Amino acid sequence: MALAGVVAAACGHRRATPPAAALLPPPVREAGPTYRIQLGDELDVKFIFQPDMNEHVPVRPDGRISLPATGEIAVVGMTPSELEQLIIERSSAHLRNPEVSVIVTKLGEQRVYIGGEVTRPGYVVLAADMTPLQAVLQCGGFKKSAKLESVLLLTPGTDGKFNAARVDMGQVVNRGVPERVRLHPNDVVYVPPTWISDMDDVVDAYVRGLIPALPRVGVGYSLQ
Image (cartoon, rainbow, N blue to C red; front, side):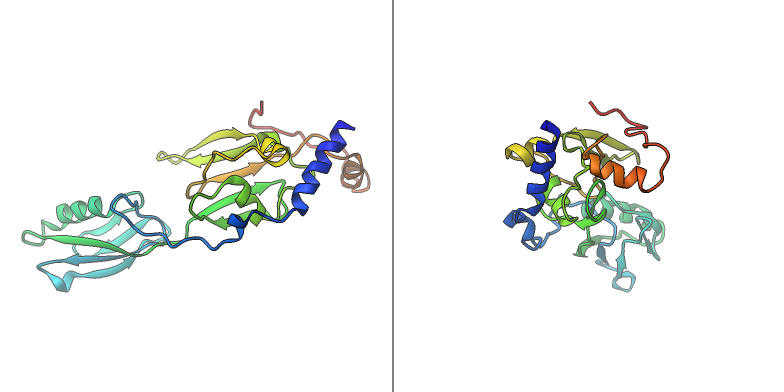
């Protein structure tokens, strides 16, 4: 009966109207002085005393741009000021006393990826101050099989590896505890399955579907 109560609470959550913040369009982002260049951004690179070298370039999917004066440069994660200094250093071999200005003219689309026990796994466009629940709601909400107490938040590090943290979404959904976590570009929210969420679901999925054995839940990581 306790298990049925948890399932009912989760179902009730999915039928509820999403918070107003989840329905609002994302605010326009601006590239301030500490903004770090992302994939898909578009840059104006201007050489103050050599205007014929000016270029308008997109940041390619490999995180690089290409300039005649410097060749290819990996720019993702740099601020415009840092990129200006790097271009000056690399172009000094060909240009006399170059002065460079880098302006981010268009910001690329930033995404958060949602997987596991949600209605429509995939990605959503990151909005300012977006929470895990808002992102999941945009993917249709949690399935009945979701283990809300052990949602994984995977954050990419500078070394290319992901740092994992466990987020208790059960207290958010069932008790209305405010969310403290905010998502960042390329975060991954993974909602693991429960061992048994509803006996009818188990029968439909594994007996009628002729699957001989239940899958092993949690292989490869530990949920506590």
